[in-house]
View (cartoon, one colour):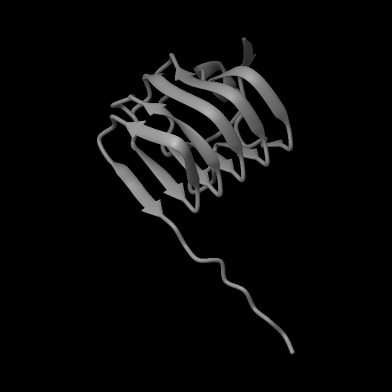
Length: 139
């Protein structure tokens, strides 16, 4: 199992991961100040075969977020979350999995598709949005 301990505000782009754990730990914030309104941990155009997200430490910063943009996630599992101000976002993703982390602030799913299913046991799903693409044609 490959373990990623991402650093805040330093996105991962175009990478492929097999069995991977993303571990959000307090040590990552020793050199960083939280930036309000900015995605804390971003993954863009990445592929994950199996993904586990864990957060074993309570992190005192406000508005922490993990966001996946245009990613393919074979299976995601989220169940060990200690921080009460952490949210997840999936934007233009293709994934399946289970989220059973009651301390998550919310989950936002926008323009994403589920492979076979998505099961969530959290307080609320903030948003589940499917938008039509906007195409502008010039003549």
